Image (tube, rainbow, N blue to C red):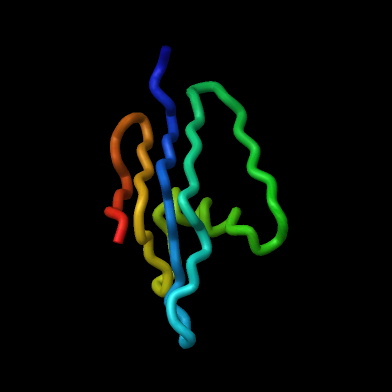
Length: 83
């Protein structure tokens, strides 16, 4: 069995707002195997774009990863401990 190409583990992201932190992703986990096609569907505002930006390390300055890990080809690109 091959290792996942992309492995997202218990990822949570929040945005700092004037009213306090707003959690937009909560414990998202999935993996994508080499050669596998992966689709992501959800309602408007469900966090699909934020997830993509997080994986690409292109989050807005007001956003932060509060916990979880993202591994690409088995190497950690982002990781945070649960707070």
